[in-house]
Length: 482
Image 1 (spheres, rainbow, N blue to C red):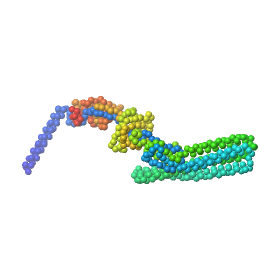
Image 2 (cartoon, rainbow, N blue to C red):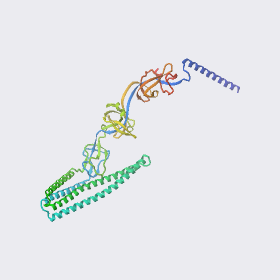
Image 3 (tube, one colour):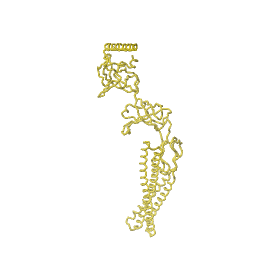
Image 4 (cartoon, one colour):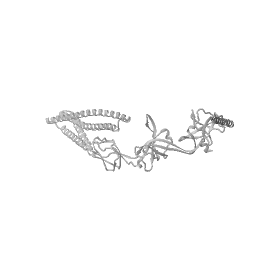
């Protein structure tokens, strides 16, 4: 036991001697360097020469350069849609077939217009001779018939309006239901199929409404000729009763002549509608159907697009991005662009700015309105890009080679926009140096106003100040430089 105690005392004595030697050496080093042991330690580094690439980032989408929109050549009910989105078509292929029942409507209208013409012609003949009882009775019968036709048409319109009102209310209810379902879908409460069913219910009701509106328009087409027939019949009776007793009877001849001209014009218009009617919509170009805006059973509307056809190959795509207006001054036609995005995985494509739109536009960015410049970018060769893809574009605006950079965290700024760093001098004091900042490069930033031999404090604390005595801690890049 005494031997163990002796060994322990010997070890403690050696440790005390070792600690004393270290303390003595530390005090001698402090006296030799003149830097107190409690001086603030600072990391520092030399500025590095790097190639800094300045970019402007923007997001956009892949669009098709050229596409053909097919508009209806006639207004009629769509019987068959022969294509769907994604189908390839050749010029001359049948796209849509119309229901030819509209021709019956035109034929009826033509018959009514021809009847109106014959009535006006008879009225003109009757205006030249004294009326007979038979002529008067015939004129009265025409008035009754015309008024009966008007009553029938007005009753049909009233019934149609009731149906339209009810269907409009149903559409509002269906749209509200769709909005509620969409909210539940986005919250994960309901499945996609329920959302699709709600959307399909709205579409079906809207299609039914379009048919009712078309039926109303067709019915209304017959109302005006019926009223015109009534007016002409009443005018004809008046002419008969006033013939040879009205000092202005000569004017009645002119009235009938005008009625004849109107009837002839109506006949010409209806005959043109019959002549212009086409039973099919034919593809004028070859390509792929990229959009379909109509369904079977609805009424085509003149001026409203039915479908779109386009060449979807890589040669026909263009990338359209929106650059914030504050970056617009840094971009120009011909600049290189790197294209990336989720749709193309880890691939990165090289592109070039082909066109910059001359007018700025405004777009919604979240809840804010942002002013942007639209830029078109082309990519050469085959790619995995497809129309509709969302992509990110990094536009290379400037390349600075062998320029000095420092860690971004080493720079400080004060009010007024003055930027500065702290340098470690040879006597281990801090020197403030004002600098000018350039472009960013990862975690480094381009600086002007420093030399390659400047020792820059890497991560300055707020407590540092000009002239402060510090204890420099040499970093790895300083060892490599020396």
